[in-house]
Image 1: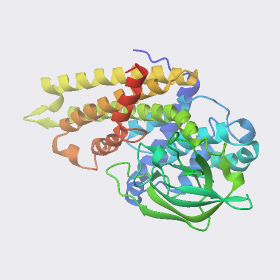
Image 2: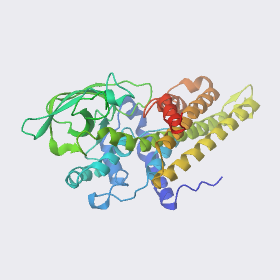
Image 3: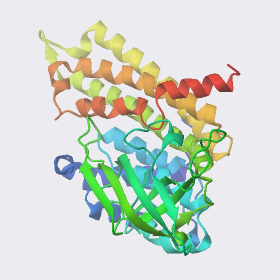
Image 4: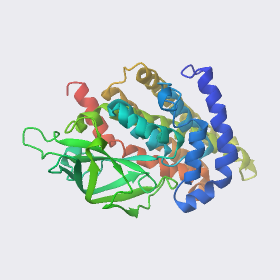
Length: 385
């Protein structure tokens, strides 16, 4: 079926990204995996290509295209090639909406030009060692100084994508204690300079997958954060997080669909070339039926993702819509990738094959951005249950 969600502009952008991946990523990708991070020079290269500035207004150095579909193209092309741009996705899909929506004019002029160029990389720090999906339970605090010029930040965060290389981190902290009536109040967003005294990057976490995406533990010991680096209103951050979660979950859904589609492509190519008992693996009826099932699953995922992309660009994607898209695509992607790995036999278990890396990478999609269990709760609530 002809896909209609993307315009010629999107497809031209796709061709550029595909060429860059082939020429500048694939030849070096094993080195990136071994290093556990994308080189900073490549982030600057993405800045030169305009990848970071697509949704940034022109007055700050961007292209002013208010469409998430360009980011979806990047996600699809990375999955197709079995590579990743590391923490670039968190930089654009997670952090940028907060800066654009809640930043003051002065803050945008101060941060966005560097954001666009890749000179200033960002991350967002919500999760804490004892607090996952329950963001209201966070214990990191930011106390306003007596003279009102700065906050004093103390606490710790974990599972922070891009946390090792980030120049600014959007840190969620309590500027007022929770109350029995309102556990969600009193949380603020501070855009913290990572060169600040008392700011420390702890362990770089070793993950099952996503090997080129640096993920870190962060700690804050009496870190002074100027009040001019408060993003939005004090105490209003929980609402900001809720507002931006649908886009985050849409991005995860796009990634899950793209990974499943890539897995089918890798498996189809492999079974055509591999022979057993004097025949190609592709010639066996079981192989054909498994791949046919996978293809139908991918088609369904694509339909869900495309509808969600259209709704998001139209400003109509609800929290329940995004939760439904994420739940469906991530759960089904796990099944599809597993079947495609099985068709590779023993080689599917070897990390030199992209299907093995996809298997590891796809698993986390059912966890981050809200677990599948949380997605089910959101959907059920929207149904009045």
